Structures are given as structure tokens and as C-alpha cells.
Length: 429
Ligand SMILES: Cc1cc2nc3c(=O)[nH]c(=O)nc-3n(C[C@H](O)[C@H](O)[C@H](O)COP(=O)(O)OP(=O)(O)OC[C@H]3O[C@@H](n4cnc5c(N)ncnc54)[C@H](O)[C@@H]3O)c2cc1C
Image: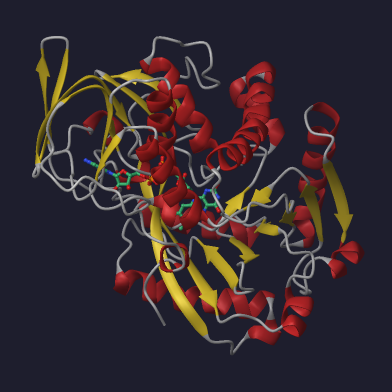
């Protein structure tokens, strides 16, 4: 079993990072080379600005190269909950922003000719318990009526042609949702950023920041640069670099481990008895699972296997065992299947699980996608680029309050308690 992301292992790594020291003066410096940072850098470079991207590890090292591969539309919450929390107008605007974010990815892929297997597969939200059906169906009816007519309700008897499992009791289908190869997209985006004239440094963690006349100086172990504006695009990884000038975000984001296994390639017969519908799938439990097929027909099966703030080889391997058990529960015919890949990553949660984008502490930022950011990060990146150029009317998250989480400064000591609480809720629901 390889302890590496399937997306990293099957994409050509970005090959045009700067080799020399970090230096120079730029209009905008971007911290973080995931979808958010690269999408912002691409737009700014296309507009002719001088742009530098500083990445602690390598392009796509964070969530962007480690996720489940789903581009799901719709807010992750029940729509009634989103309306109650945000108000009807903002909930509607946010829902449609997720739709737009997928359209935008399709446009970027076409403009930059990125071969990443983008496909409008549709997503199934699967009811894991009979008691979940009524809530899921009520959500479907509300969404269908108010914001997304490209949705359908599937009864348990309709699922046979979709998912080869007895574990589900009905599902909501979101037809606008898509899937793609995340590693090829993130590398393609970085290659486009380079082609449009921005500079990308890898292995260049930002460890300090000083105010300078008309801007900022950022320090990395590879050197320092000056920039008029700084974009923070570090999401769940905001606490990963000691000393990084990201304290504002560390106090507002809770980084939670999420884990994935990928099986060996399934035979055509196994595909037909496992996921004949070939869609992205998400289950309705709080500590649930998400899965899809890879381009070479592996089952890519993920979940919040453990409530841990760590993703390393040991932690990921423990999670693989938990995921294997969930996989066998949902697909008993795959109980003994070989697992070829196992990896994990950090998901950046906000307290209300809605993302944030704006300006604070001298930086423009977009983050907190709460596990639902592979699509939205491309749109938010473009919004951050607009802000850096003085345009503020494109931000669907403008003006959302974002208080610090009490007693939290980046290391979420309370995660095991949260895990117990959600586990209990799942057992009782
Ligand atoms: C296991 C897993 C499964 C997921 N599945 C899905 C899914 O199927 N669908 C979905 O919509 N979302 C999913 N997500 C969430 C999604 O991947 C993220 O929301 C999205 O990739 C965030 O992109 P980003 O560019 O904002 O952040 P990231 O891709 O995390 O990039 C942040 C970057 O900042 C860098 N960085 C941090 N600190 C510094 C510093 N001081 N200096 C320089 N660089 C720094 C990091 O190294 C990192 O590369 C998943 C996430 C995980 C971890």
C-alpha cells in the first residue's frame, strides 16, 4: 500500500518552480499554492500584475492534491439550515455561487487546456438510515422548489442502477455536480500561472511579515520579497508553518483530518456491481463517507475516520483500517479487496461550516471551505484577485461575520469531544 495521495501519484508534478532565491518586488504575493492561491495568481497575472506565489511544500501539497475528487454543487448544509443561518437571499446567492464555481472550473480547463477528465457526473446524497429519508427528502423538495431544479429524488428501489449496496434507503441527486482528476487540475493551474508570467516558489514557507512603506515584506528560508498586497490562501494548513503570520486565521479555522483509501482497479464486473451510476456519492451520517471511481476504476473511498488534527503516515494507516471496515459494510463484495493507496489531509472547518473571504490583518484571504472547497476555491481565488485589484462587488461571502473561536489558537484540543458528540448523534438518529 502506498502512503501517498492517488492524485499526486498519477499526475506529472509541476515542473516550473523558481530555482533561485526568493526576492524582488511584486504587486501581489500569494501565500499557498492550492486551488485558491493559484486561481488568484492566474487571474492577476492575466491582468498584467506582477505576482509571486510562495508555497511551503509543493504545488497541491494541501487539500487541493489530497481530496476526494468531488466537485459537488449545493451548500454542504441542509438548505433550510442555510436559510436560517444566512437569510434567504444570501443562502440563495451562496447556493448558486457553488453552481458557478463548477462552471468556472470548466471554463478554466477549456481556456488553459488542462486534461483532467472533468465530467458532469452528478452527485448522490445517500440516506444511510431509514430515519434519514424524511429529512433528506424535505431538503430535496425545498432545494428543487427554491434554488436548483436540476435535482431529483431517488427511492430505494431506484438505487439499484446507481450504487451496488443494500446500505442506503433513498437519495437526492444533484445533476450539476462533477468530478475531475485533482492532481492534474492543480498542476495544470500552476502551469497556466507560470505561463501567464507569475513566479512560483516551492519549499518556501512564509515565516514572518514586516510592514514596509506601501506594502509588506515576507520572509522565507529561501529569501525575502516585497509586495503591495498579500493574499493568504492557506486554508486548513494555516497552522502548519511555525511563526507564520497567520494567527488571525489560526484562531478561526479548526483543522480536522480526513482520510481516503483507493482500492486496486476494479474489473468491469466489479464496477457494475459497485458504482454502475459512476457518480460522486456522499452518505448522510455526520461521520459519514464519500466515494467515487477513479479514472482507472479504483474505488476512492474517504471519510472522517477519526477526529484527529493529524495527518501523517501512522495516523493515516490507522484511519485506513477504519475506512476498510466502512467500505466492507457498504460494499460487502469488496470486503477483502486490495487497498493500493491510503492518505489523509486536513480540512479547514469554520464554526458554522461556511467559508469566508475578505480582508483582515492586512491581508486578503479566502478559506474555511469546511470540506466542500474543491469547487469553490477556484471561484474564491478569482474573487480575491478582484479584491487585490480594488473590485469588491464579486464576493458572495462579503460581510460575513467571522469571530475567533474562544480558547482556540490553531491546535484543536477539543476535537475528540466533537467526535464523540457526532458519533453519538449518528447512533441515536
Ligand atoms: C482528505 C480530503 C478530502 C476532501 N474532499 C473534498 C471533495 O471531495 N470535494 C470538495 O469540494 N472538497 C474536498 N476537500 C476540501 C478541499 O480539498 C479544500 O477545500 C481545497 O482544496 C482548499 O484549497 P486551498 O487552495 O484553499 O487550500 P490548500 O489546497 O490546502 O492549499 C493551502 C496551501 O498553503 C500552503 N501553506 C500553508 N502555510 C503556508 C506558509 N506559511 N507559507 C507558504 N505556504 C503555506 C500549504 O502547504 C498548502 O499547499 C477535501 C479535503 C481533504 C483534506
